[in-house]
Image (cartoon, rainbow, N blue to C red; front, side, top):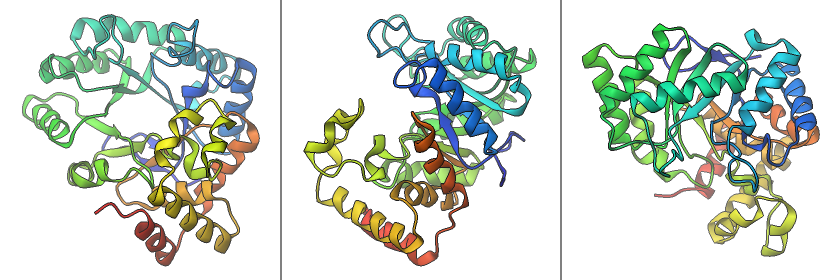
Length: 317
């Protein structure tokens, strides 16, 4: 299995990340265990979650995904074979993003307990906290790294300016730096990342693991009209893609998929994997059948012509 390094962290990952947002939501514990067994059995090693997953489910409090992963780690004995990423800061008690030293040091202990591990491989700032000084946030992470509780840190949902500012502060103050960015990025939603963030990541050698890599499932080709929106729990978030540009992207995916005799899902992920700036896309599955489709993307190498077809169909400039 191809291995890629997350920024300058020295942490190597396979080119596909399992998105753990489904654990405790659309995948129950037993299904989640099967999915994780299959994912790691296929040679992949990076599992992404967050302390707030899956708080949006009625009756949940958050932490359900971490709890499922922790139980699986204990049962499987695979802690040393996988890379675990989780996040802090989103949906703090006051409803705002909070990355204060006090909150980080408190919350990391809760995540470690749920994950049943004594260290987190990649600890993400889930959202940008524009109130807490970056020096304080990065200083808290420095404490955790020195204590052996965190190996590397990352940022999610940061603007290019704020990411660059954080990197500059790290360099100037000998503090750990964000080695990985987790941005919204897929074949439909390209502008936010490509406009400014991508250049910063390439210049500063920051790894990139994209979320919503399949645009909540739209790029699988499963949703082609409003009549299809009831097919899953995510259907409600798909409507915004059902426009001329979105349908044009699906047409291009269908064309390339037919040429390679693969699926639109695999092509959409392979397009991300081929992007110089992207270390690995994050994608979720709720069945082994879906997961098998995802993992095949890692062995699909698109030609320059295929990539150009997709680029033109999804052009934003």
